[in-house]
Image (cartoon, rainbow, N blue to C red; front, side, top):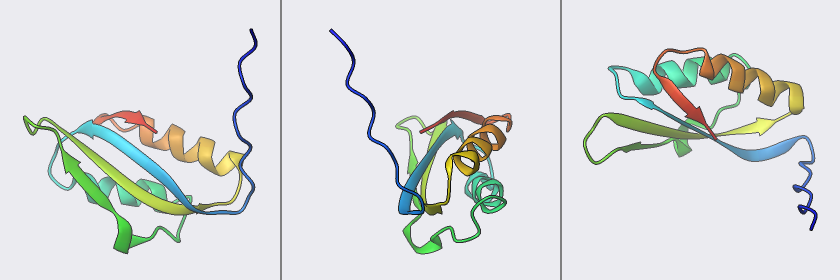
Length: 90
């Protein structure tokens, strides 16, 4: 049985969600936004969602960008994962 093919993203793709999960630290949200803005200046600051884990150890930040291409998304992922506190990028 073959796997269904993942849906193709048509670029530019407005409202593309980027969710970043990592260990909570002071200014975590600002650091995440700064990294993403290097590649996507149009990050929608009005729609950023921040969620703490139940024990406060982890924090997720979800933000929305206009994705312009696969290279942009790969570079965002690479730069976010290079930060010591980031554990996962979805």
